[in-house]
Length: 271
Length: 368
Image (cartoon, rainbow over all chains, first blue to last red; front, side, top):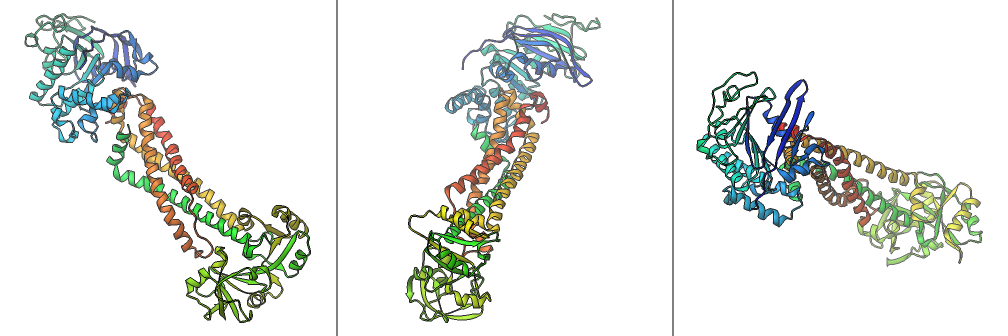
C-alpha cells in the first residue's frame, strides 16, 4: 500500500440551511495535514452536515470549504475530487448487499478506470489490511457488524484518500467491536498519514484524536487540542465527554463564556 | 460496471423478468408480423407470376386482388395490344375447397398458357375439363389426394386427373379447373378475376403496366410483389398495422422500462448516493441505470425474437392462411425486432438516468 500524505482542510465561514433550519452558521475551521479531528456535539448540532460539506456531499449556502486549496463545489466535477482525495466511513456501513466484500471494495476503483485485475489485487490487499482476507468473497449478509464496518473502511481506503471522513463509525457497534474498529482506523491513519475527521459521540474517539471540535446549534463552541498531531499516546488523552453530555459539557469554555471543567492539555477556543 | 448491472438485475429477479417479458411480447409481435408480411409479400409475388405470367391485370380499388372482377371481353382486347404476347383469363375462387378453406381454386382456360404450363407430377391432364380437375402437390399432400380421388369444389364433386407443381405456393396449395366450370360454380357466367399476361418480346413490365392502366380505365396492373400488396386494401392494412404496432410497442415498452427504472432508483437512492460519495461521477451513475434499462430490454428482445419466430407460424395458423402464406423470418426482420428492443431500453432509460444525475449524494444517502 502506498503512503499518501494528509490533505489540509479549510472551512471558511460556512453556512448551511435545510429549509428554515440553520444547520451551520458561519463555521470556520482549519485542519492541518495528517491531523485527526473529532467533531462532536448533540444530535442536530450540525456535525454531520459539517462533515458532508467537508466531503463535498453538499454545497454550502455561504462560505467555502477548501481541500488542499481547492474548493470542491467550484470543481467542474465534484465527484472527481471526492474520488481523488476523500474516503468515507459511515455509521451504517452502506455496503452493496448484492456484492461480495471484495466487490464492494472495488466499487470506488471502478470510477478510476482501473482494470479488473488491478481492482481485484487492490481490494484483496485492502481486505488483508483490515483482517478480512479470508472473507473476501462473502456477501455483507454473511458478515458480522464489525466485519462489515471493516469492509467499509477498506472501501474508504481504496482510492488512497488523503482525507478520511468518518460519520459515527462505531455508532452501530458494541463496545468491543468499536474498540477494534477504532484501533484499525487510527492505526491506518498513523501509518498512512492521512488527515482524518471523525464525527461521533463516542468519548473513546476524543481520547485518540489530536483535537476535539464541539458544535452547538450549528456553531463551533470549543476546540480542544491534545497536543501536536500524533505526538501523544492515546491512553494519556482524555475523552471529551460521554454520549449523553459531551455536547452540553464539552470542556473548556462555551460560547456564552461559561467555564466548564478544564481538561489536561486542552486548548479552548471561543467562537 | 457490467458485473454490477448483471448483479442488480439478478437481485431484482421478478421485476427484471416481468419487464423483460413485456418487452419480449412487443418484440415478438413485431417479428411475427414482419415474418407474416414478408410471407405475404412472397405470396404476392406469386400473384404477379401466376401461371408464369409477366404481370396481372386486376380490377382497381378492391379490398384484395381475389375480389377483383373483370368482364370476359377484357381478354380479347388485351390480346389485341402489341405489347401483349399472350393473355389468359383466371377466375379465382376462395373457400371453394371443402376441408381446406384457405386453398384457392383457379378457373383457367384449358388452352391458355396457365394450364399448359403446369408440370404434372402424377396422373395426367384432364380428359374432360367438365368433370375433372388438377390439384397442386401441397394440397394433394394435405388432403391425401391422388389421381382418381374426388375433390369437392363448392359442393360439386370432381375427379382428380393429376397432381401438378408450379413452384408458386399459391398455386401449389390450390386446385385448377376450367374457367367454364368455375363460372358455373360462382354463378358469374361472363366474368373473371384477372387476366394473366405474357409480355411481347422486348417489352418492360413497368412500361406495359402504365400503358394498360391508361388504355383500360378501372384496372390496375400488378407487376411486382410490393404492388401486389398495395393493390389490396387488406395488404395495405396489414403493412400499416405493423407500423402502428411497432410504434405502440415502442411507447408501451419505453414507459414500462421508465417505470421500472424510476422505481428502482427511488428504492436504491442510498446505493446510488453511495456510488456518488465514493467518487462515481453523475454520468457514470446514470450510465449504470441506463445500462440496466438497456440490459433488460436486450434480454426481452432476445426472448421476443425467439417467440416471434414461433409466433409467426402460430399467427398464420390462427388466421387459417397457411395455404396462402408461409411466414418468412429474415435477418433484417430479426434485426428490426432487436433494434426496437434496444430503442425501448434507450428511450426508457433516459428519464431515470437524468434523474440520477440530479441527485445530491447526501440527500440520496439519507434516503436509505
